[in-house]
Amino acid sequence: LATQRSYLHAVSKFSRYFGCSPDKLGLEDVRAFQVYLVSQNISWPALNQIVCALRFFYGITLEQSDIPERIVYARTPSKLPAILSADEVVRFLEAVPSLKARTALTAAYAAGLRASEAISLKVSDIDSDRMVIQVRHGKGAKDRTVMLSPQLLGILRTYWRLARPQTWLFPGRGDKPIDVQVLHGACRSATKAAGLVKKVSVHTLRHSFATHLLEGGTDIRIIQVLLGHNNLSTTARYTHVAASTIANTTSPFDRLSLGEPLP
Image 1 (spheres, rainbow, N blue to C red):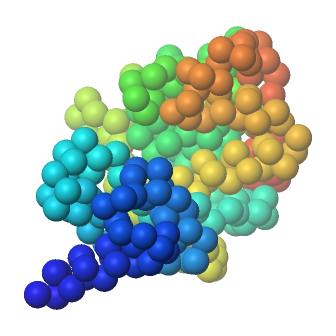
Image 2 (spheres, rainbow, N blue to C red):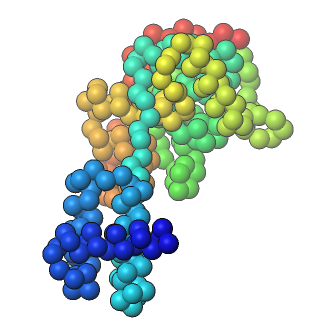
């Protein structure tokens, strides 16, 4: 009964907005009504409840089976993670006690890597001759090239001398890389130890990387390539960013004053 009342209320509201019978209204009217509802700051759940009612109205009541699937549900806007300042990045990284986790998180910020990409790095992916890092099988199974920060290279060399990784840059148990949960746990403990009020994750470091580059004047098209966003294929057709350009792009990590990792 409550569902029926909700359905009748939504269709009635739709009809009153245009001042005519709802069976005289079409798909473009539905879309205009959705725009109006959004402009009225209606909540996403309430908006989707109306969408559900209108889909039912056209598909079942009016038997216009081609329309319902064209009335789209609203997607809840994704919230961007907090952005760390340069000082907060330093405080956070220096609060990670584990050499391996700290180096992995340092690489994540310095190169804008996803957590899955950071743990999947191999020793052979670090190309110090060309000053780039090869990111294998990123999101969508895409490979990409990112810059190798000179300061990160120094830290990776110190880490290698101390840890002596063979295949995986950050090895875990057996022949597998470090578990991603290790990085998530390190983020939680370092956030608390650093006294940060912001919730910090590996993605926070990645997003801070992109924001700091943008603030530093780096072309947004280069940032899209570095991050390997889903619209990379569209962007790459116009940008043609070469590996040499990426190698010469300064990582925001090089502007930080960070001490050497302790064994």
